[in-house]
Length: 257
Image (cartoon, rainbow, N blue to C red; front, side, top):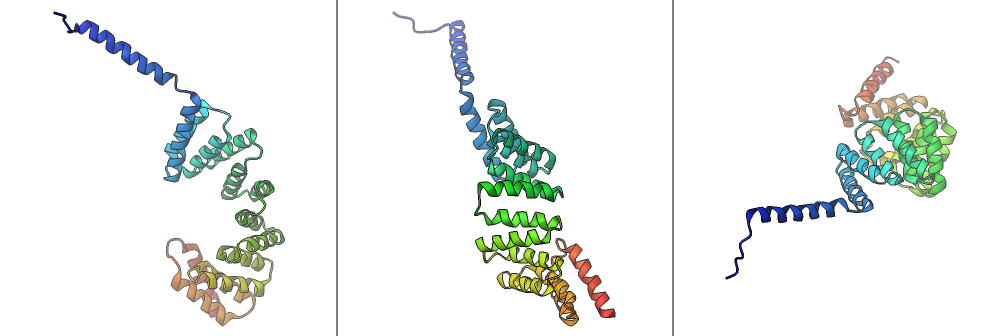
């Protein structure tokens, strides 16, 4: 009779051989396949708003495939999500070193430069991005905002005009063009823009505040007081706190005149 029992020693040896084979198979996973896996997981983490996890995944991608420009772009976005803007800039810059035609790197670095209050650098990046994608209203709008921050009002107006050609019913663009006109002492035109903003979006409370400013410039003081009061009625006490304080100051000063 044949004995089919296997001794414990032989069983352990066979198990060890099997585990070694599995481990060997895992070790021989192609680096590019592993990089793709980490990249996909990183994108999912970004979409979920988890900057820490996304950073970890894209760091693994870079470890496995250090010349992948998109990995640097996405890790840069993960850093930005965490509030680490300087590291975000470093990664976007590295992405551009690997791929000088990376639209995403220029666009995202421009946004960070705006947050860092470096409007001239933001303008440079948006200009480079526009050479790669000419019909993007968001780029013209963002560059217009950078010009506005840099007090280059004629340039801002040109970009807002172009943005409106591409997105003609965009309340944000009308509002910011109104600001550029207001700062350029074109109060009547600014008032038209703020009115158009509120026509498109009646809940755009900042436009009501800025209507008050334009009406003040036009010496239409009773209407200015009404605009400030309308703003105060609709304003969010948390997000609009600085403007609420200014509106109250303006009402106090206008009452004394």
